[in-house]
Image (tube, rainbow over all chains, first blue to last red; front, side, top):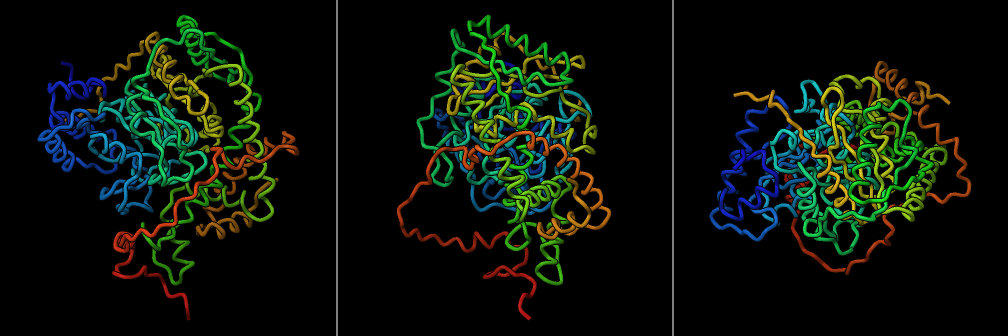
Length: 486
Length: 95
């Protein structure tokens, strides 16, 4: 049997069901490795002691029919967890201990999983490199001094470094898919409305979705099956029959039509990405898929639209952090001064920047010129996809315009940081499902991802296409464990 | 269009985030770069386009008007920044 922590969720589940491994053995193996991996800074808060207790409890009376039997899982620190500190990577929530549980994490525990701890992320999920976290940057296990992507950077690093079998992240403009691409892992953003947003610290409510981050496509289908559910507590949750994604997972994509949007061939795109994309197209053809050239004419307007819509919603969502009812408070002579000092000291620079953008575009006299304009362009972007999906079953693109970059390389230039999300943002704006799978490496041996985009609620087809491509690509991450300490 | 220092200060007031002059100047630069990038939207004519207000095409659900008695006062007050078992404490607001 291979080393416990390098096993997939599928393997671990099988080993538990066949009683070859106990939950306690597995939990302790992940904790042991985490203790030696502090250098990566993936954990904001660990739950190790309680996790061991829970694993023993599971072993004493195991329910082997559950979908995640006694499997320890660490989650992004954006999900509220009862009794376990939830910070959203921010000083302003540094001392916040929720008294309620997010629906998606509750789904994990209902299916037998055990909370290992809370993973680092960009502050309020605003960032593409995990460098805006109050708790410091995360190192990408792929190479030293390299960002793991963001905002789910602790999550992507933890999966790639074998510190959790699988994890869940959140994706507002690419925060699952871009870090997955940077770390050679799989990340899926479900259709808006599939996974409940209840109990997730809100960033931009019309874009936020939780989703699985895993080592491979099969694990991704297993985890999606658990977290996707209709929830009365989220007014935008959609009541539809979800698939048994893992049961219906198939490599048979013969005759499926896959669209290639010409607008994703952006200026200055490295040849390596172009080549990666071409390889993906060849593999899809080898699997019997039909390749169709399509056009998404408003692609170039997606990022500017996103940088109005997302900050506008954020400025409104983050108005609740005022130091009155929970979280950090800085004292003031009067109420207004207390608000202003609390928010000034409690938020980091990127969050303040976005609140300011959002406040400006919603302020009197500018609403029509910016916010309303962006909502109209969002309609055009959505229509591009509607038109495309009348001709194809799925769309194949690169996940990111580059591989992982160095820590500190882009922190002084917000716009160049934002450009990271050029291929992922349109999917959030249109509310579609998208998955990033590792598809190759660049000249530095850093991973690169391909993205498969589907119609609303058709997670199955993007999983199936990814499953077929994964087999052809046969990606190996070969990470050297350079960060381990005794 | 460009955002001047006075506007930055005005927005920070609206956003209830106090900033000093040095930070305001830095923000002014950042915001102008970002808005220059955003201005690209003006290339598009959107006169006859309906604004997209909800991506999930559903109507809001009604629920039954039921009384659910749950005593959650303690839970709600649990994370309050200043200790007081019954209320949230803030600086004096009435003279």
